[in-house]
Length: 409
Image (cartoon, rainbow, N blue to C red; front, top):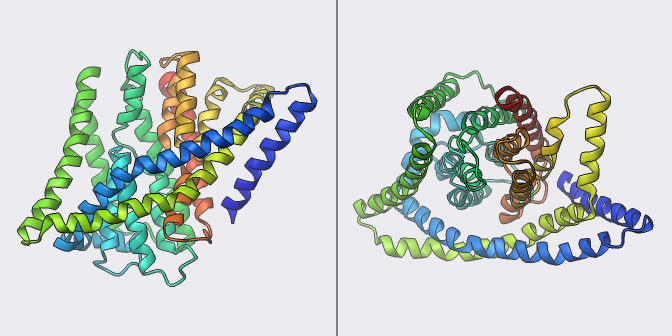
């Protein structure tokens, strides 16, 4: 229901701003808004079409994992932790393995690989959902962790900074890690309060300790590297993770004497259907965002926030990066465009350039993910999913501002 109100509000606010500009003599706002409906519809369709190949590949790979029993074994191994975060999922259920794989892919910045794994996890969670049109507790916990997920290696952001001519494209590595951890912890706490999950469990605490040790070890490993070495290391590590995962799945099928090729084809057939089913949800959210942005409503909001911050006598330097923060929960490409625009106007090594980079990676596209993931399995009632996702987003954004002031202010 919350997403419904936000979707309507984006259209209404955009239209109101456009009409006001018309009466003020600006005859370009309404045509720009109209043009944005066609542009964003086309972009949404092409985005889903572009996902088809990736979905087909990973749906096929995951099918090999299912048929070989690898995902079941992975779920069994992880069940002491995941069954406490997802108590509604039966022990050893393959959904646990898919959830872990999705979260791991997000932590390593493997966006293209993470989406099919997440959609597969949602399908499996829907299979044990007793109310098919209503989000279960497990679905909400999964999407909260997904939208606020820790990013250990922000490969894409570092690549954009390097392309923009940043002196040190990797200097946002630690700030991004800290801010995304803040958003994840807050999201996990809020969702656990709703679901009455005790986080002070030895298995959950052990999981945090292992993740912390891994992050600390990774940070120590790359600390002495120069920019080029760090980017090369990150690219090699992510490539190794993707190719390694594919080979492990194929090997598990071969070891079980499966017809690996047939298993892949059977799973891959669903990739196209999933991609097509996402088109209405993606187009809906992108068109609403496009209208609000084209109307100038986003820029007006930024102006008023800046005036309010300055009236309080506070430093308003961060307001220049506010469009990235406001766009991020709605549209990943939109937020990325805002970040690149700030690179162009202020420079990637400016405070706004650094803050824009951190805001781009501190959380994920909450409304886009909710619309796509829930839409893929026919969920219409989101319950408190939007509240948990937005709370995590806000925590990450606030942390991004303070941490960016500490590192780059």
